[in-house]
Length: 172
Image 1 (tube, rainbow, N blue to C red):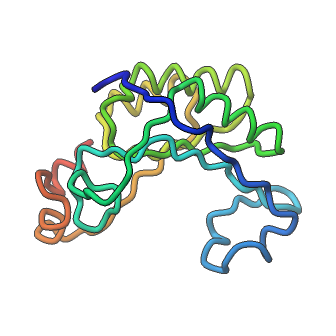
Image 2 (tube, helix red, strand yellow):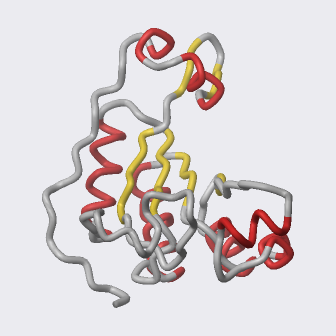
């Protein structure tokens, strides 16, 4: 239900490693952003594992009954972003399943507050949305939107992502 954010334990942010190249695996290195002579690691806040989709490859899929579901209230997301900023992170990634409890109004307000209060770069990874939603999120300050692309084969796409088509995905 939109806006239903039960109380859960406060998110835990891991301390930033002192040497990111030694602290992460080699495949993770391309995800780092090089800035001058150092790397910038994004602080990742996974704020919901609810999802309306039932993608066969995803652990967050709607029909996964083994997963304990959670949602973090917008104020707690902001607090986690503030903690990340206090720990030295300058980029934050907000990530979730496609959860209708977080309307574009809620998300836009959150991005705007992070930008205004914390002056952080914001990347979003929230699944499929409309072009208007992407535009609105960009207009309030989102710097990037990570949209995963699993396959370009229409038949495989339809099998892996029931209820949607590759054509529809490419049009959004």
